Amino acid sequence: MEQGKDVERGETSSNQEELEQPFIRRRKVVAHEDDGSGKELQNESIGMVLLSTGVAVCGSFQFGICVGYSAPTQSAIRKDLNLSLAEYSTFGSILSIGAVLGAITSGKIADFLGRKGAMRVSSVICIIAWLAIYFSQGALSLDTGRFLTGYGIAAFSYVVPVFIAEIAPKNLRGGLATLNQLFIVTGGSFAFIVGTIINWRALALIATVPCLILLLGVCLVPESPRWLAKVGRDKEFEVALQTLRGNNADISDEMTEIQEFIATVNSLPKASILDLFQSRNIRAVIIGVGLMVFQQFAGINGVQFYASETFKSAGVSSKIGTIAYACLQVPITLVGALLMDKTGRRVLVMVSAAGMFVGCMLAGTSFSLKGQGLLLDWVPIIAVSGVLIYVAFFSIGMGAGPWVIMSEIFPIDIKGVGGSLVVLVNWSGAWIVSYTYNFLMRWSSPGTYFLYSAVCLLTILFVAKVVPETKGKTLEEIQASLNPDRRQSI
Figure 1: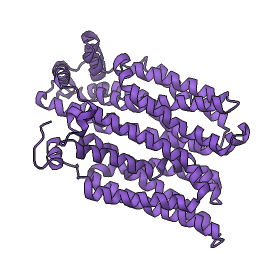
Figure 2: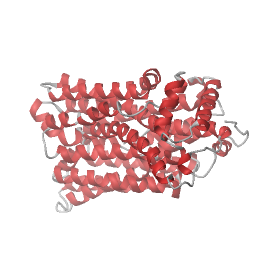
Figure 3: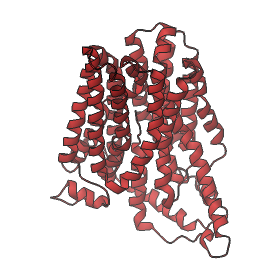
Figure 4: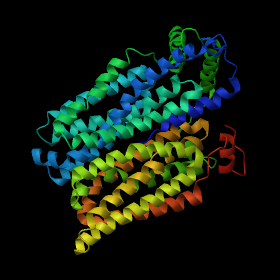
């Protein structure tokens, strides 16, 4: 799952900015005084934030490795363990089942154990999972390990962006938050490339390294000050915030802001799942769920999980195709991040879906030509071009766009429950697509990609007719556009 993908990042940063607005005060930070030492003190305060972020995104890198692991290893695992297509499809897709469970429970774990505690738990689970895969002699151990990696990365997908959002200064929050998605893509590309060079057991062993680094790293960085304030550990809250902002920074104003923020959050009524279906919220639910359905059923997890076999079935070297796939993702994701605030979410998602449609049509056409014995010299080129165009355009908009829009359209009082719903829909769709992809390809390779291309067309229509542009609007203005007959207070 490209996951690109985090609900809670949007929820956390949006909630914080909305609720903090009434309490914003001018902060007295010595690092900004004109005493000649400002630059040094500013670097001091940023240093711990960057270190903490660097430790946290080891979890994002782990996420990417888990998602990318099955693509370059499919042939070798099936051969070594004598797995049928159905057994390997179970292995590839069971990650999403574990992720559904992780998505449901990760918030409670992070609230109970803290952000660092949740990252520790996820790291330990992932290490155990990779060892189970490494020592596998059959489908049971293999599937158990894959299920546990799914649980672990779902927890990472929640806690990493939340931790980053809670430790970062407001002026750095947006930039640091993009590192989560960047490291997910980088981890996936790493698995794709390294998996073509070493065997699947060695790759499983290497995959434990980011978790080991994270386990050591969390001992060196402070806990989230906001979580400490939330659970009433006031002394530790002050120490953690001082560590993050620098020893010479005056944190009194920010401490007050955070404490007032926590009090405001606690005063909000607790929303239930039924509140999502009230008339004032139903359009936001349709938009959020609809975008996740279209994101997944356009086929991304099937294409990504089994990319090497797709290239091979088209007559292309699986190593060359997989490496090209991996090298393309990172720079294109960076381009998409830059365009998100320039072109607008709605336009970028529609352009992305249009490009994915072209990619699917090319890939489907290549398989159709191969089946009819036509233009055989061109088939591999068309197939690789189609898949790479599809991946490039997904990375530029459909990967992150639905998550950004979702984080903006829900009113603050239902963002938590609304976010949980769309995460559940997303991971459920990921499981369905990743499990059925191999069977669809056996039924009809061109038909599979033509089916995905139809979903891409429906995505364009859905966004054009239903999804509003949220770029440059306050959350109040977004709610007014969703409910024109009644302004919604947030």
